[in-house]
Length: 627
Ligand code: COA
Ligand code: AMP
Image 1 (tube, rainbow, N blue to C red):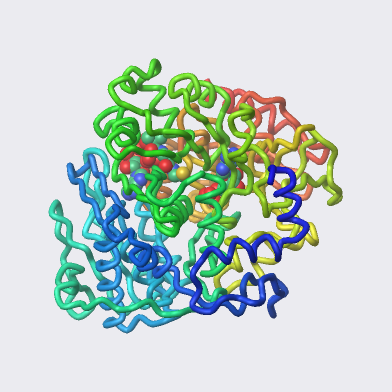
Image 2 (cartoon, rainbow, N blue to C red; image 1 turned 60 degrees about the horizontal axis):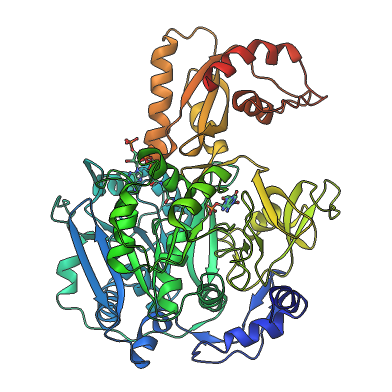
């Protein structure tokens, strides 16, 4: 079937299309009902089906004779360690760790919070939860204690699984003090913590609450997978919204397994036995989908890389891994390649490695800027594919169909809608726009399998955030257009979410933290252009009267607050102390206009501006940030 026919078929007869895909999985109870509406007025996939995701990702492959194939490769230039697990070995570790969790009282439906660096135990813990039908919530290791506490209070995990430390370039980050601090400040108290003790730093364990992973594994016995309903949650993954409270995106088991297998085959072109590498982190959706679940469900070998694109030890690191493990497709964020291109503009280090196994490069997390697209294409001579998705969808909404990819990719475009996604551009009245006209990017319902089933314990937020403004559509929060050949161009968020080095962050949350400072009367945080990280946050604050601290001291304190509350990944580029902020007559701060001034774009001043003088006052200062 060609792309156009396949896409039409998938959107016109979603139940038939996705029934065929579901048949490729081994269910404990095969679904008869493919697409149905639930009591929350949302659609369920495979409502009467039963399966186990850990079984499909592990035991199933052993049954198919792949037990001795490598399932997971751990490569850690920051610790000089390498390790490989066959499907047999990984299954045994997962089944035993499931026993450890069970012994701590974890059962089907219980939540387990996983706060871990990029080590195999992170994937083992995720799969062990899936084996028991427990719901994991992985928190990115770069988040600080406050972020952890917010997630503990929302997910209410029975157990926290962690490691004694993370290892970044030139520094060791002790995790246990962060967990202790988070538990102290959270209202909900998890019963136990399981800590994987790493050689470079051992954590202190609190009696009766904290246990060493290694000690608990000694007497563990493998447990079999527990059947769960297709609609039972597999995981909650928190992502930034427009407020200080992150949204707990809930993923089901059945739709997710179907979507993961489908996307591995049809978006990434991977077959069993191929090596797939998503150079991301298990704390993000890319890590969930394409470090852990996707490659394992497809019987591939996956790579967990604990390192950076540069400085571990140099800008040839990615090419070294591709050669060493014969990677067939590599997926990372554009920022990683901008970092490599900056250090090694001629790609001289690439020449040291044999990249003959590498067929395709996939980019996501932010728009692949045309300069990086051309650089990658020229230097690697492989297919460079920008594809667009979000935590909520869990897999690509747009990409380049494999059958046509050799014919056409377009610089700056995220490709064509993937089968299953009926993408439209809507104007401010909710009407589809004509080709090449920008608007809000929306997906006509139903969403295909694998997308979010709700926001954890908050279906009202789910509906208000995604479904209400354009009835019959899921609103993505991105703006963009479709050209006359059907290619989608994603031009950025229409809300207060920004992308810093491929990390999705909320400026609203940063504003809440700044406003909490006793000297701050009001503030705005905007995402401004950065050549390396895509965007970085910039703060503007108006101070209360009678503040005795110097501006210099205050700026230092405010920057430290953001680091302490969210983490180093959210470091503010700067904080400008200003007299007034530009607003509309109804009091809305003109963040977009501020950003346009800093980024040197055409400045659109809304007619509803309260006092144009404020912008005139601020402009020289804002332009200096750019320079
Ligand atoms: N645990 C603890 N701290 C972390 C961390 C983690 N997992 N990840 C990042 N940090 C810290 C860093 O140590 C750094 O701290 P510092 O300011 O005290 O030095 C800070 O957070 C910012 O880190 P980062 O955003 O990674 O910036 P960088 O300048 O160190 O590196 C890049 C820049 C582009 C090399 C890096 O951001 C990168 O590799 N990006 C790819 C991102 C990616 O894969 N995203 C996933 C989407 S697919
Ligand atoms: P996250 O939920 O962290 O994956 O971030 C999702 C957001 O990142 C999207 O809503 C987009 O704003 C942005 N994004 C991801 N991939 C792309 C892409 N290929 N092109 C443009 N923006 C992207």
